[in-house]
Every structure is written in structure tokens, then in C-alpha cells.
Amino acid sequence: FKKDEIQNKKKRQPHVGIPFHEILGVSLVRPHTEDEHVLNPNVIVSHHKTGIDVIHFYSGRTLTTIPLSDGVLYADVNNDLVIDGIKTVLPDESSEIFQCYGLVETKIPRSQYLFNVSICQSQLLERLIIFSEETSSKGDAWAAANPIVLSTNQDTSDIVWLTNRGLITSVSGDGNIRWQVHSPSNWDPSYFSLESDFGPTLYPFSIQASSSEKDILAITKSLVLISKDGDILASYQFSFRPSAFVVGDIDNDGLNDVVIVSKNGYFGIVLHDGGPSFLFQMLVGGILFVVLMVFAMRLRLQVISRRWEMKGKRFD
Image (cartoon, rainbow, N blue to C red; front, side, top):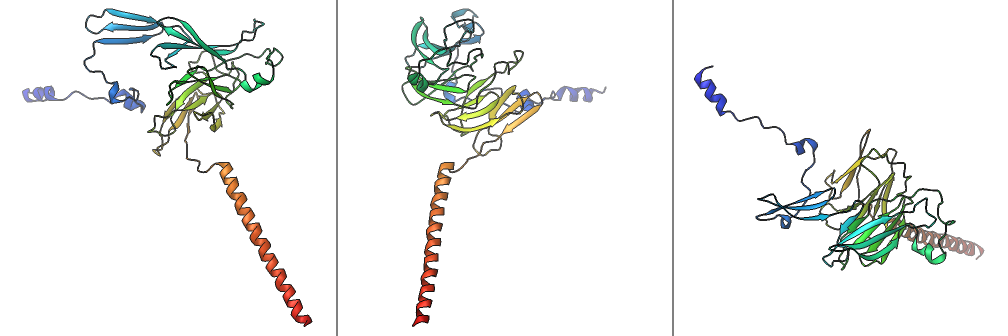
């Protein structure tokens, strides 16, 4: 090689590859706001399977450890600045006592019972009949999706449970049931493979891509969109078994959409503004029908009256 060629090679910039997240087409950093940025950090918070460790940034020394139990959702549901634990208790086939409820306890710094609520039966039915083994589906296995917590404008957050019978229960952070609805989100516990990491899912979902207001997305054998007030807004039955999903505004119309992943490929569900409700359309249609009927009757009466006038002139 000549001397100038060697120098040129040294000056060449190294090849810059395509970032991994650009290849995937998704961002590896979750959406966040500027107030989440930490200036001059001095610790690292590590969240792992057994709990949370707070590690000193410069020395590597563990400052504190918070053990977390498996199968428990941790959140401050009543805004008292104390971490609470949310757990689902399902019926045991080997037990003669039917127990199916959501349990909420204060977990950190010490465990203390807060409340429990029935999630396997509508509260309306509980007021009408006394629950017994005959009223339950004896021999049928019970399952539930992991609960979620929704922030509200109230003093407490909302906790949402979903069972495999399709019953969705929303409970306020002080233990009062806000609403219950029977949805198409039912499934057999054997439907989802034990080898798969994906199972029945509840997900806080914003219809407007730019909104922080959350509704509820339930993904099982079907996709069901429920408002935060318990109204079923949309549903779609799958012809395949979902294995993952991604939420985002696919068509840039300002509404979030859902991409369902299966072993055979990807399936996109695009949301559109449905416009007036069906009841409103029926009401408008009924009013138009009545107006047309009145107009037709008046026109017919006018024709009949003209005929009688013509007959009267002939007799004269």
C-alpha cells in the first residue's frame, strides 16, 4: 500500500449499522415524560424476580432490598403513600369451600388486611340468591388474568379483575365495587399453552393516542375494549391463538390500534370513530319514519278530499 492510501484508510469512519430498535420498528424506551428524568442520579434501582434492590451508583453497595412475592401486583391503590399488594384467590377443586375473590392488603412496610371482593360472581346475583356449590360450575376449572390498576381523578385508583367466565369487576381503592360486566372475554384454562409466556391479558388502553385517559383492553380468545365506566365499546373474536400484542397508532389517525402476534403472522385491528351510537341512529330513523308516515297520510287525505270535491261539482 502507498502511504497516502494508508492514511486515507485511517481517516475513514467506521461503518455505522442500523440501530436495533429501527430494525424492529419499535422503540426500546417506554413512553415517558420529562419529569421522569433524574438529575445527578446516585443509585440504581434493580427490579428482578424476587424483589427490588437499591444499589449505590459509585460503590456498588446494596443500600436496601424490598422482597416482592410472586403473583402479587404492587401499587398504592388508596393514595396513602403506602405500597399495597393485590392478589387473586381462585377456587380450589379439592376444597369443599368455594373461595373466589380479589384480596388487597397493605404490604410495605408491614402487611395489613384492607379488603376483599368477589370476582367470580355478579354482586347482583349474590343479593338474589345464596351462593352454593349448585350455583357454581362444579368441576369446571377457574382462571383469571392478572389484575391491573387504573389511575382516576378520585382519591383512589381502580382495580380491575377478569375471570375466564368473562366477568370483569372494577373496584375502587377503598373496596367499593364500581361496576361488573359480563364480556366475551371467556376462555378455557387449557387454551393458552403452558410453554408460552403469553396468557389472558388486561391492559390499560388509551383510545386517543395523545391522551393519558385509560380504558381497558382484554385479550383472550377475543379482543374486547371496555370503557373505564364498564361499557363494552368493541369486540373481535380471533380465529387463531394470540402470542403477543403491540399497541400504537398504525394509520396516523390519532386513534391507537392493536397488532396481534400469532405463530402464523401478524393481525392488525384498526380502530375507527364509530360516529353516532346505534340507539341514536334508531331514534333518528324512527323519527324520520313517523314524519314520512304523517306526510303520506296528509297527502292521501288531500287526494281523497279533492276527489270528493270533484264528485260534488258533478252532482251540482
